[in-house]
Length: 134
Image (cartoon, rainbow, N blue to C red; front, side, top):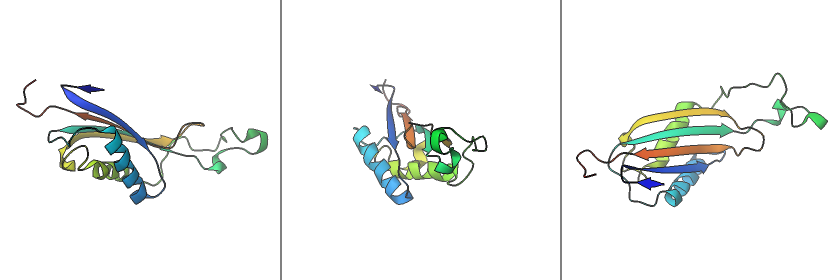
């Protein structure tokens, strides 16, 4: 949904390799962001979802059940800040002119639930430039 007080877009994309993932994110951003890059401030909210390895689940009839020993938090690589930086780089020239315009960014990473698509959910909010007519 677009509004005169700012723009919002949601992008969802995932891949294994950073460069191809970043390129896919850029392609998804181009499809979702149908305006020229903004020159004002931008905020990002990112959620990174990772597929659990099969070793987190039981076997046989328990193959859809998490083992009690399976970690609840995703506290391994890639680092949250590196994921966020990749998103900021991928959106440069598409959503905003330069990633220095990102003045507020929040990110989290977690394991995807069964049936949930691994990848990234990126919510973009822009504010009108200071002094712009409302």
